[in-house]
Structures are given as structure tokens and as C-alpha cells.
Image 1 (cartoon, helix red, strand yellow):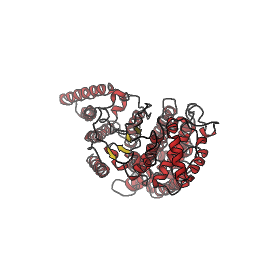
Image 2 (cartoon, rainbow over the protein chains, first blue to last red; image 1 turned 90 degrees about the vertical axis):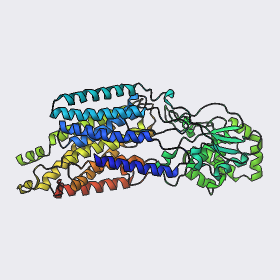
Image 3 (cartoon, rainbow over the protein chains, first blue to last red; image 1 turned 30 degrees about the horizontal axis):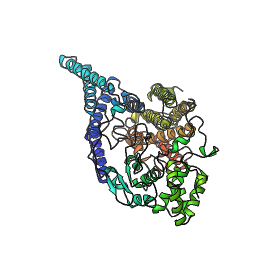
Length: 366
Length: 209
């Protein structure tokens, strides 16, 4: 077990160092690390007890996989409080706007301590049925059962389970349209962010400030509220964890740019996922008629492209994945890119308000 | 024939078969739940990684010989017995696991692109790769600890395999059409099987057993 604990400590330290080198805001959360530590000890103790009671060469691998499997299932079942019993998945999807998940980590640690004690006292009882092991068995059972009851009483998936808001001072990139983000996302605030907003400054009805607001990480549903003309909201719900998980050459700001660009051209959030029919799964581009947000997506694509990241409209289309979902949108973008500067600005001046309100179709683009 | 029967008993084949049946049952239950309206079909990938891993751990542990060097004096070919035992178990469990992910019908409301393509093929590839990994580990550190290496490998997968551009060596997380992942799995299987069949597993003091 000492080797497992040592390995865990080394991995935890490595993660803390790696994270610490990349963050611009906040402090490490100690509780998930503590829970993980107690979990390593608890699993070792339970595995030892199972091995003592059921000796056999198949027990160790079967037990290890079964424990992971069972706990994985409890985490996948996101509507249930049973996920609090599992140390797996702690803090995943955690928002920087609120305090950590409301899984009571201290209670969770106590549950794992109780489980450890219970496993060891069972082993002790199989060897010597004396008063002390029985007392320890009773105490550990009481601790384990009471903490399980406490954990199951916490409504994990409900909105009330979210922690209190964490106050922060946004960091901004000043320009004719000021772009502001949560300080945790400061690395996303590059020259490109200001460059995306630049062509729209001075247009009738154009915003003066774009500010990052909190996305709803639990439901992945964007708030549908009407916004004042001067304030835009853009999502950064694909965070550092996704950055780790994807290609190493994708930077945080590349996640930000499309969100910011879409917010600049649409009053209501454009949701590409909403265009897909969940009943049939049919390709939305095959549907006759205009898709919601298609014209806005085209202009948003142009805003990202003109910020200088991509060499040509074609390379942008190739690399930007699902930003534009239909071929006809791609043609519209190429047409828009090919316009002369003055012609494009004149069109924007005349149509920007209608574009933001969603009154234009892709065919209305020049 | 009697020798083969005794050999299989010494490898705890009845126990291993029972455990493999439990693994298949658990896989089927999980797959049904994941493909139900309340499930998350994308998570079928987790089943496609963990079910073969569980089966591989059982196969790896079943390579242990309780007789050590004494077994080498048998008049029959030991590699042949080992080959029959291991390939037989694999042929038993592979169709079973493929059925567990191919038989549950996804809920009609689930969009097809949310479910991994050809799950039975992915299951087969991951099974032979994981089994090969477990055999290699059995040869290196012994049958009792043979599960530790594949389990460690799979547990670090989520850190490196996410997204479409995940690390290529994270072969269990690749789609069924990925040729490199098949090549890695096949090489692992062939090398692992050959190592265990020809030389047996390591005993705790490092001697071949």
C-alpha cells in the first residue's frame, strides 16, 4: 500500500505543478486531493479484506476492475446522489464562477475512513473474536453508515447544489470594443480577441463591451436572456481540461474566438446543436429553407478569419471544423471575404442591427 | 485427455469461466443502461475499454502455474497445452463480449452519431490487445500481478486520449477503422501469447514458471 500512496502523491504533485504553471487565477483545491488519498487507502484496505476472506488468484484483478466499474457507474448516473460515494470524477466540469462542487468532501473522506476501518476490523474479527475488534467493528460500521446517509441526502445535480458565487474582477483588453474575461481565462485574451471585435466598432447599434459570463456547465444550456446593446455574453465552457484532452496545438484563445465572434453578431446565442433533429438525426443542411443563425455564423466566421489567424477563407473553413455546418454557408463566407473593404463596411453599417436581431438570411449577404 | 483436463483444472478454468460470465453479464447490463433513454450513449466507449480489460485480467491471472518447474517434466508439449488453454478462453469470451454490445438496441431517440461505430469490432480489437498486454505482463512480473500493467495503462487513457486528435498510442480509444490501433493490438497479442506459450509466466522470484 505504501507504494500506491507514494505513486498517488507523486502524480498529485505533478498535476499540481503542471496546473500551477498554466493558471492565471485561483488556488489549488486541497479537498479532492485529500479524498483521493483516503480513497487509495480505503481501496487497499477493502481489497486486502476481500483477499483474506476469499483467497484466490482471480480475486485481485476482479476486485480492482469491479470497484472501478461500480464507482464509474455511480458517476455516470449523474442524477443520483450516489455519485457522492465515489471519489471518481471529483471536480470535473467545475466552474470558476462558483465555489467547488457541493459534494461534502469532509463527509466523503469520513465515509472512506469508515470503510477502511470496517474492512480492517472484519479482517481482525476473522482472526480473533475479542471485545476490542467487536467495538471497533461497531464504531466503524456506525461511521460508514451514517456518512453514507449524509452523502445520499445531498442533491448533487440540483441547481441548489452549486456553490456560492466567487467574486472576481474581470480582466479586459481595451479597444474600441473592450473585451473582458474572467481572470482564470486571461491567457485567452490576446490581440486576436480585440482584432475580432475591431471591424464592428462604430457601427450603429454596435456594442462597446463584450464580457464573458458564466455558462451553465451542468446542463450545457446557454442562458436565453435578452441583452442590453452595450453588453455581450460569450461562453468559455470548453476550458483547460478540454485543452489537455485535445491536440496540443489548440490554444485556449482558439476556443474563445468563435464564441466571441458569435456573440458579436447575434443577440440570442446561436446553438449549432439545436439545428440537429434529435428525433431523426437528419442533416440540417438537407432541410429546405434557412437555418437559424446561418447568416450570423457566416459573418462570425469572417470576424475570426480577418483577425489574422488563418491565411485564407478556405484554410479557415478547413480548420475550423463545425463552425459552419453547411456548404452553402461556406460559399457565402467566401463571397463575404472576397468583398472590398469599403463595400463590406457599407453593408455592415446598413445591416448590422438586422443581422444581430436575426432578421437576415444567408442569401441576404452580399 | 486426462492430462489436459488436469492442466485446465490447475489453471482454475471453471473459476475463470464463471468470472468471465460475470464480466459479460455486467457488460451487457451496462450497455443496455447506457443505450437507454436515461443513459449517455457516448459513454459506450468506457464499456468498450473496460470490459476487454476485465476479461484480459482474468486471462492473465489464469496463466499461473501452481507447479513451477515440476510441470516441465510432463511428456506432453507444455506450449501446446498453454496455447489451447489461452486461445480456448479467448474464443469463449470474445463472441460473448461482442454480443453484449451488439445486441442491445439503442433507444430510438438516440442519434446514431452519438454511438461509436462498429462496437463489436472495437470490442474485439481491445480484447485481443488487452489480453496480449496482460500476457506480456504475466511473463514480465508474474500471473498474480499481470493485471497491474494493463489496468494502469487504461486508467491513464482518459488523460491522453480525449478528442479526435488524441494520442495515437492510446489505441483502445481509437475508432474501429483506425488501422494503427489494430496493428498495435495484434502485435501485443501475438508477442504476448508467444511469450507466455513458449516460456510461461514469471514466478515471484523472477524464475519462469
